[in-house]
Length: 111
Length: 114
Image (cartoon, rainbow over all chains, first blue to last red; front, top):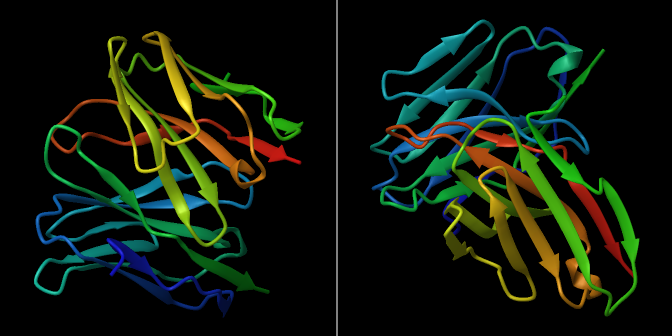
């Protein structure tokens, strides 16, 4: 089993739709969680951190479910500019603070 | 100017050639990383460094070496490039904090080995 798993997609959704991605992780000791956004041929950039209590930033909501070992990202009112690959990132404890990336979920918002 | 700068941005080379990818940062971070990205495999860690005297292998270090010349500079070398090292390479930095903080990436170096 991969340490961090994501559905690669692509998710093709119309503008204005709500779309949700999940990401599962295998190590229950994982400490912190993030969603990064990566545009085609560009570098990944932090979208948002994922807190135990969940967090919201405008149209984006991130949730953590430790019992089931997954995190989710919900995008409401999708815009064309949301088209990108969304990377799930999980940090492990310890001095190294190992960072593991999912392979990404591709979102295409269609006019 | 970008906080994390990689050179070259694109490089085509031949099998057996020595290649160096350079990374410099202005964020003042101690932690620096080299990743490669391949379609369907995500980002995989090659090497990482927590300070100038600290170099550590990542998941896929075979065929690569690094040099941390200064806090701000971290170079990745391919001593004898081979075609399966064709990939998009990213340098990243990270601050310190309880959870290690956000990773800041350079714009990437696209390497093609023929």
